[in-house]
Image 1: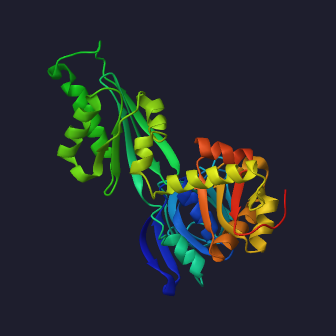
Image 2 (image 1 turned 135 degrees about the vertical axis):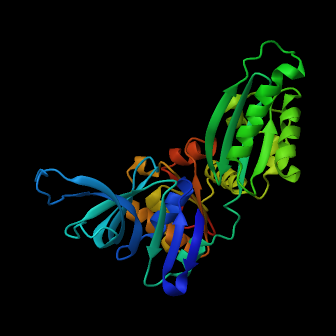
Image 3 (image 1 turned 45 degrees about the vertical axis):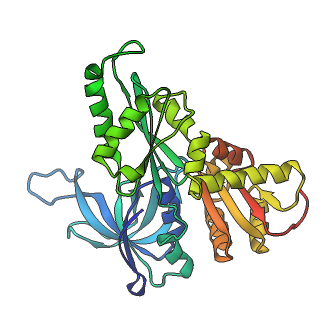
Length: 352
């Protein structure tokens, strides 16, 4: 989440949504009575001599919406916010009735609140390094896959085929392919990204060296032990032991360790664990939750959205940690199998 302005004393935060994690954070921030300022479109009926009375013109406007309700959709690719328009950049836009806006990655907005709570300030200004991003490259001389890992969310950006045949080939013939891969890495990379290159054979070293010419060399690492390339290679790279060592202390490693501990406690009938929303809610109400992970497809389990948001906020207000897990990852699938939410407890409440 790119925060361009944040002034809690004046009740205002301007930001741009970047990822699914940001949508979760924003959903936890937006409350009834807030004012959301963003770009939207409205149908405006022009009162002109030859205009049709039943037709209108759809125009782009900046509106300020007094929030009545907000909902994440099940795919977590957007938030729908409904409310009443209180300000509009086009005077012809009616302020009667309700209006909805859709927020998705890439969307910029300003959120105004009368009071920003300490939790809400922490959500905007996280201190746990969750903004750290990896750019992953799985490559050999035939194929390359490039993806990004932000928090626990993996996105495969593109795959490239070289068109080169055989296991060997002169360096001259592979130059256009190498240049294309490195150009794409440079285009996708953001300041501060850690670039991790893996793949079978030595071709990955050529890509890494050429990338170091274009980008800060200390941010480019080569990992061994990866036999796949392309999109499958990007997904497999995260599981490689060399990447696990490289990413120690990152959000994805913390989530993996949390889920592994959850599975271990369940298998040992350790009561210091909870899963499914009702049980985690009870544990949160008792102040017992040390850390909690929720799958991004949790709503497929039919849980109450507002209830889930309240539980997550309660956990963090009591000093617990909350993580969002990508349901396409192995640990995300494990969380989904336990009702979409799991928690490690500070002490036992009751045996399940």
